[in-house]
Length: 357
Length: 180
Image (cartoon, rainbow over the protein chains, first blue to last red):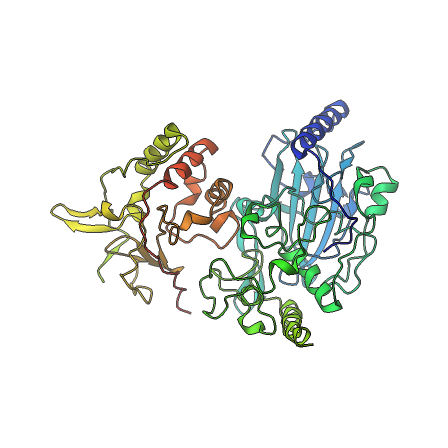
């Protein structure tokens, strides 16, 4: 549960979105900020997306603001760099603390590197029609530029060893996660950019880097923040171990498993939400029976989290597998996140101890 | 178990299923039935049986997927240049992905694959090729890439039709992983 005030705010999200879209359209067209490429047609080269001020030297345009979510998505140990570019005069509408609305023309980049080599850069752009454009660019071996990847992605983009490869996602793959909830932007949000950075977050070594909520507020880049319960939200948990797990689940599972997502009917909410979560994340998993057993799941794994029994907890079995029909997350990784497995295993084992006390 | 090699084309008649029993929008359901019949959903989701004219769909099992009583325990073994094989019912398919079994698309509340799907999830599933739009990948030979190009109205019609197809209780087995 994220620390928040009692009570909840009610508002018309559809109306807000419509108003925001109209405002954003007005801004974009008044200032001539529309992208030069055709609708739904990403530029052929990464250097044509506006990431660099000097493409030859790969100097990032200073108008592109670096950021780091404090609870990052783990992607086979890839090192990542991220930037956002707001259109001139564009302001994020943060009235909905759990689903920000971005101005038309907003662009995001996420660069993936393995062993010091840039492999791919993913790109999102909010187009004039209000729809996000998704594209992935694969870097040339000489590292000078990156070219638009095939629409279905590339499965063997970088050899990770033992016959495994990091794959560049196809456009449909992007939408699996990004179109699962009320906001298509996932890592740039209230909790992820909290200035109260969780120093213990798993894989969060760079979590303090880049802009935070206070930067956005101080520079007039976001509005509606006065409705947030806190300007420095943190995950409230009963123990350090629980907070560690909740942060990891937020960044790696919550994009699909949350109370406002398409999968909300599963009743498993792994995203920390500031306003709308009816109960805590823990309550939706600990001691809760699985709805449908996945292929490869053991017959005794009848609970999402079975207190004291990590070996028969379905969530952990799926986190620990890379059999495609069983693994979670279902895409984006080909390796098991051993650190996460260790953390979640320890947490589940300790749940039994607590119950016995 | 007999197998048909993929190279053999199976030409099936276009068939209808039982008319809608309960439907909020009869026109939508009718459109969905038309699309399901025209697009070949029965080819794999309705088991074939042998008749006087060769393999034909067993409409007593319409859209109920791979029959639970037909047990398959391992992928087919084929030699070059073949890459895969299909069961005699055309409801189990073996290839580099292992063995996939076609889903029970009927409205059975216990075994129908769509029992927990919302309309939005169905549309997302057809667009992304993943269970409920976001889960594990749907295995070959489900032709979701071309089907996913249908517009929202057509996909909604298909969903509306499938949700009222008479229930047939048939628990389709889990897929079998490929041999390592």
